[in-house]
Image: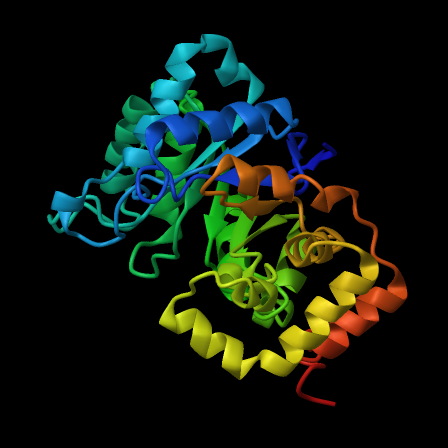
Length: 329
């Protein structure tokens, strides 16, 4: 498994990042343990979770929050040497209870949320603490002061963002620079062959500031994972996926035919396409089973030719480049 610097930082992470959103929801604890074991054996050292993972991301506390973090914590407790062999990332922002200060990015909530994540993860530090969404109602002076305190106390090492707009990234980074802080080292965004809006302004901002991109939903909810072939094999799909298939059928037919010509699995080609982008540090994979994890390990080894990349652009066109050239002379 190849490793690459996380943005402009000196930290090196695997090109595949193990996403754990399914842990505790569709994946039980023993299977989650097996997935993490196999990930480490495969050289994946980058594990991503969030305080809200493990149940529906809503204020309904009956569903159980923090389950994904708790599962990771119990796995780490089995062998304390594991902690120093992985880069552990989690997130803060989503509602963790029904109180008015149990969410978003106030200094009050950041401190309490970090302490709670540390307890669930059974560790004394978080390697990458990510703001799950932007909070435009809280000033950056307050947010960075809270993050700076966590770094000073050794509870957090690096700070990242998720679902930020280009101007949010610029605003956050400029505020950090004014405080002589490193600021953001990574951004998690929705990015795949079917969803390329970040190419307009987010990716240019990341490149300018030296921030690594970590795409989530790289397979577009399974649409890019060979969905037509699976449907022919009689596999069940949700109503939402069936609607997407009909909406994109001609593109999917061309895409899966191209992958067949390459002799590669559609999911691996979708991941490899992301990893060819120079701003992408690692892409998140969220296997529900050990079999799905094994299938993803091929992607970093795939080299796509310029001709193949052009054909993929033709099948799944982006927004036309970067802003404003994409829409203005």
